[in-house]
Picture: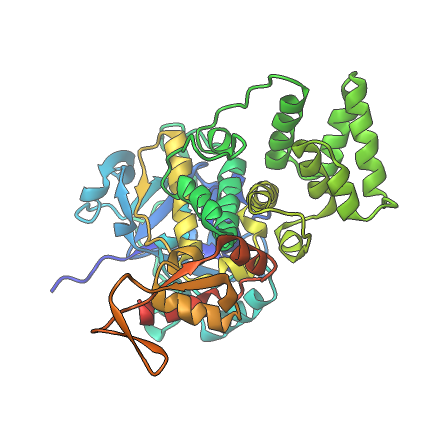
Length: 475
């Protein structure tokens, strides 16, 4: 029996941390901190090796610092469901369809970046010590969840790190000099913004049906005219600039722009407002500066006194620095819609990399969003590459459609008064003061939306995986 082909991407463990943190195997342009590896050799492309990595290529991934450690990403090639790759054949890059890649005699391939985390079947380490060291290091980072990344070491795979030179091995310089179609290596900011937005929407979907409907718009990639999303679907998903009808819409359009591109949102928005000759803009800038320098009023009063929804947005964005602090905020006046809007805006500023680790640790969510981001990028870049979409995890609201799960959840979270029991219409008799129904009559538990939202909005949903496991048992 012929041995099964294996597909490898070599890198170092520092870049691996960043790949997990950002949620994509990207080109260097997509990294916040990048160490030289093969991703820089052919900008915009990812080198994939079949069965063996040439010694020079493997050595290159630690060339920048002798303290770097090699690791190998083993790729599930079946995760790529559409598109054209390039195979190195007779010193040239030739197009090969994904359906023909397994039968190709080539051993080096190129795929346009990025690739999702769901493409990684395992991460191979050179020694068991390096594997354990990486596991320990990952715990120290707030954005490197590894629960769904298979970390792997065996004596057999240790040999992958000690390949023998072969006369047919091609050098890195030769690879760089082979003619190749230029690839537009687009910015990743909107891609990561969408990843963050999806994560936050998934979290805040716990709050009720309206939150779930907004999430469905994004997960189904279909805009609903019946749901207000403040133009975010058109702006991010469809890459359309927002119309600027008046001063308010002009400010809002600039808020979104700076949330996506700024490294210091507060400073950039203040500079923008101060540069505009309109006295209203200067007034808003002074208000934000005074507030940021410790307002004498409590935030709740400042928030209530803000006259417009955009004014409230800016106050919230200046008051809280990230999604984690938004989740911790307990402000009674916030409605379900407010959590949706602020959750999206904070996510756009945070990007996927700063989404709280406990959310990214929800079973299946990180891989789902990673695949979404990769497909979004490739669709926008017209590469034709498409990746398999992992199974979408269920939100709390989706799980609460199940009556048995409702019963468990209400007791577990001490929220029984947020539901009511409805017995189907049927004849019954009163026996010893109790209603007795003929046959088996299953009651229905209905959510009381207003009571549910008031009870759930301040609850931090850190037990999602426990709830998901329980749902699988009772559904």
